[in-house]
Length: 189
Image (cartoon, rainbow, N blue to C red; front, side):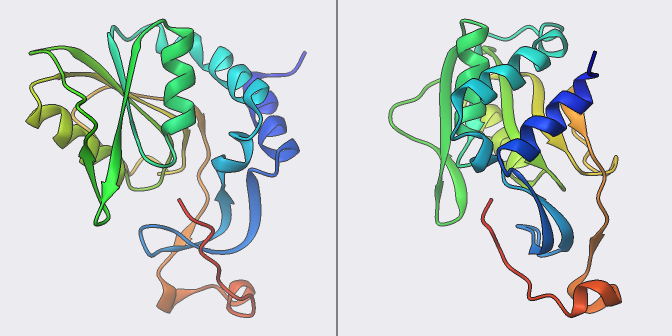
């Protein structure tokens, strides 16, 4: 029988969501590996299976609503909300900052689960946290499919991840020799 981590990695590989090359991350750092969750999100049966595997960890959190930051968290957040029969809202990028739009509101102290696909430093999650605070909600926790922060992403709220995978990241001025000869690409986050 396959472990959960093995099954998750197999789903990412099969859907071409785990890439290898020379990548520019949203943070500006460089990496030899990139999780392009948009690839797995094309296949709803795979997304459903990932959330089924994630569900035991998510069941420990009490939430009424799922908030997903665009773009990465949209499909994942919607599937979490579907499987947990929760309300689903999302934040959109406006001038590269997240905003709650389309008339989405939060009740005072409404328990909100923030759902993201991948974090390295947690920038979009921090923006989502600020949105919840500004709108009177209460953060129940943060759920991410892949935590690649290597323990460096810290929040004042519970963080649960389906998969923790630490790949080294590099400052562009301090690339290892094996990446210097590969053209860097920014696949999008």
